[in-house]
Length: 176
Image (tube, rainbow, N blue to C red; front, side, top):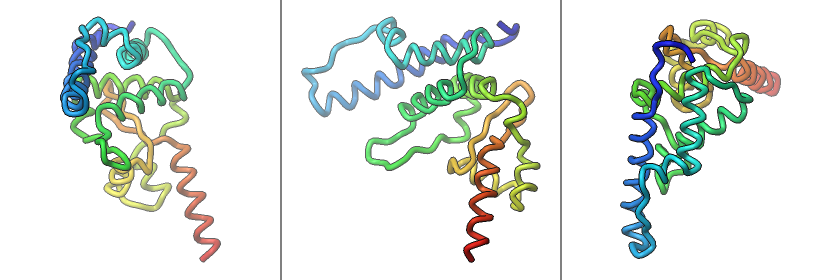
């Protein structure tokens, strides 16, 4: 484990209790008799709790997992936290990435990528022929996948997404 990194347990427990209180609120409107009281230990031992513990270990550098498993676990957590019931999709507020849980997920995601798979925001803008604000907008609407390195404070765009956008632009240009 790298020194100086938090164990993230408080952030994990806060997230589990937040989701649990939301669940309780919803079930009380749907079918209150079906509600079963769960302890923090129960929540920690459930699928979300186990995913959060794995992601914390990844963020601390204690373990490594295949990138697709890491990204899938992070997406599952973000969906639970941010996907409203009647919405077709979800958005993650930028401010979330400044919370302890957000920093944990960002570091786990950053560690899942090889540095050669990441491009600076300035380079991404240059390669795509757009401005930096456009890159940020595409990051917010998930057109471009990105990772934050909380240690350096830098944000990187995933190279594969830049290549895909360039390919789509070239195909559209060839058609038009």
